[in-house]
Amino acid sequence: MRVSLKVIDNVLGEEDVEVIDLFIKFLQKQLRLSEDVKIICTPERIGKMTTGVRDPNNTIKILCSNRILIDVLRTLSHEWVHEYQDQKLDILRNKKIQDIGGPEENMANVLSGIYIKKFQKLHPELEKKLYNE
Image 1 (cartoon, one colour):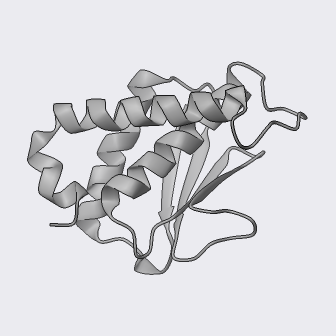
Image 2 (cartoon, rainbow, N blue to C red; image 1 turned 120 degrees about the horizontal axis):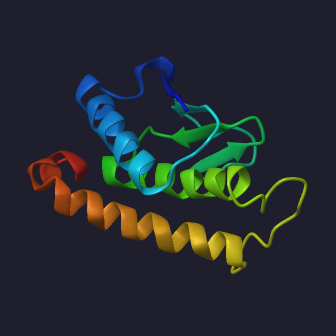
């Protein structure tokens, strides 16, 4: 399984991209996916996305402009969980899920919070970078 990361319009600096790459490696150890995934960092919302959206073709789009890095990572983690639900649990394929308060959305919210805290504990040296300080 490969992950490709595309940054549109230089919305992120080189150091931010390095942290995102590190976080992606961390996510791969937490929830292993079987199919390739494309992650796109975009400067503006696309379609109906709020801060992130997952397309059925294994593409995750993340809004990255005017956000602190920790929020970008949390959104990435949330959408990664949805990708896992689709690829490994066959939950999302061809099904309409309850967007607010449904079990799939709750799972993504809970796990993304856990992964953010674990990542921060593993990399205390990144604290200032994660909070744009």
